[in-house]
Image 1 (cartoon, rainbow, N blue to C red):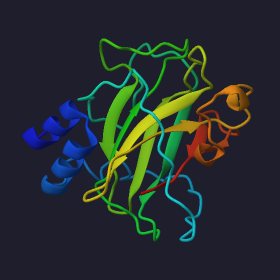
Image 2 (tube, one colour):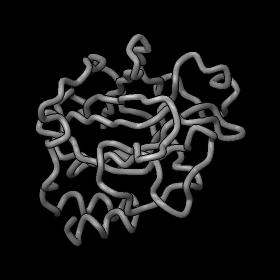
Image 3 (cartoon, helix red, strand yellow):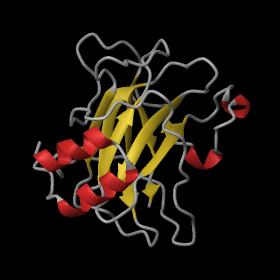
Image 4 (cartoon, rainbow, N blue to C red):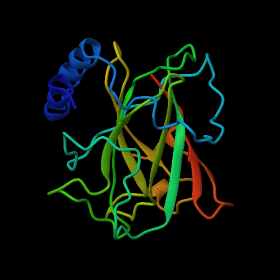
Length: 200
């Protein structure tokens, strides 16, 4: 990882992120995530639709996460889920080399605040696609089930938001929940398949 990208992840601020991603080069691992893999279909982009709504990062964001497309490590417990999609501009143009930084709780609803368990970032390929392998998070007290993510494409503002699971009993009781941030989930396979497109 080059020095400028490391600086971005350490600083974690919107202004610094915009500057660094607009001036640094393509990640050497960008585009490798989808090579040799067939990604699930993603929801259609609507040019008349609105951008993905932002949400709070919450108190448990950790900068400088490792670059990886799978958050599953030896000993990670929980049901596996594969999340795929694209990062798109408002006119539905795929955004290559966009950064996605994910974090969430473990199966018991606990965040790792001392290390990088269930935390990691990656970059979209030339078609703006990403693929994340992880587990279904547990429920943190006071919240419904969710993923956290920061998304930024070159020359675009940083989006911090959260993704939600459909048909969760706590969705309607969570003050942060927004239906626009629901993932599409196919539960028919042994590994659940989820899709979500980010529009910046």
